[in-house]
Length: 243
Image (cartoon, rainbow, N blue to C red):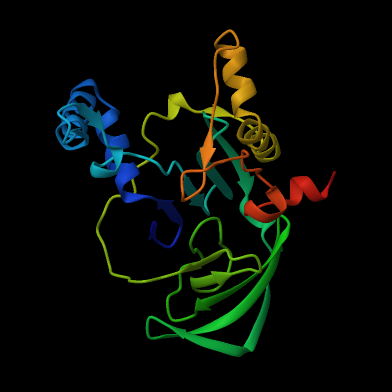
C-alpha cells in the first residue's frame, strides 16, 4: 500500500489498483487493460488447453482507498463490501489521541513518539515522527503532530513504513466515482459479514438453487466453509460490540 500526503490532504491506496482503475476509467484504457491481462493471464496448460491464471497479471484485488482532506474536515473511504462498490465519509475529528512523549521508537531512521487511540473497537498504538510535520498515516490514521510511521494492535493487525521519498506525484481524485454508491460504515460492514458467511445461499437465490461452493485444506480435503468473525478479522469491530 502507498500513502501520498501533503500539508492538507492524503491518499492511501494500492498502486496496482490505482493503475488498473486509471486505465479502466476510459473505453480505450479498458480495452488496453483487457489486452494486457489476456496476454499475461491466459496460459497454456501442459495438457494442451488454455486457462486463466490471474496471479500472473496486474489484476486488481485490493479495493481500498482512503482520502483525507483537512480543509473539508472529512475522510472518505472507498472499498468493496459484499461484492458491491461503496463509499462513506467520516469526520476527521472522530479519532482522538493520548500522546506518551517519554516512549519512543526509531522507524526509518526517525525518532518517533508513541500515541494511543481507542478507535472503532480496537485500541491502537502508533509511533509518529515530529520531524515530518504531516498529520496523516497509513489506512485511516490521522490527527497527530507528525507522520505516523508505525501502528499496531492486539490481534495481529499492523502497519509499518518500509520506505519514504519526496514525490511530485499527483494526488488524483477517485477514478470512476460514479460506480460507487454511498453507504454508512456500519451498514457496509454488516452487509459484508452477511455476504461472506452466506455466499452459497446468496448464489443459490441468484441462480435458481443451482450453486455449490466447496472449500479444501492444504491437502485437498473438503472442509466446512470458514466463518467470518468480525471480532477477530475486522479492523473496525465496534459494530459487533454494540449489539
